Image (cartoon, rainbow, N blue to C red):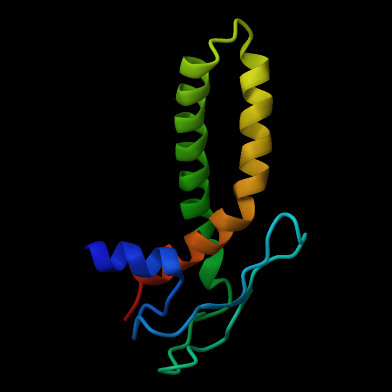
Length: 117
């Protein structure tokens, strides 16, 4: 289980666990979406099985975002103890926008690991 989590975080191929899934990671500061390889550079495993394969990864990304937002809300409400939750909402919104590129990348890798052949 530990190796799977490590490989997901590193973004390696679900088949051989050696090749990289993404050519470029992209990022918020670059204003660039991550770019994926079509196939694994090591074992030639095809990442996108069919058109629309990664639509399901949106649900994984949503789950990650909600979990991060809830955890951040609990942390911020405990640390700062604002009387007004609107300030916490603004901090959470800014953090979720910043993490959106990471969530997109990690959710696609999780989706591939869930449905690897």
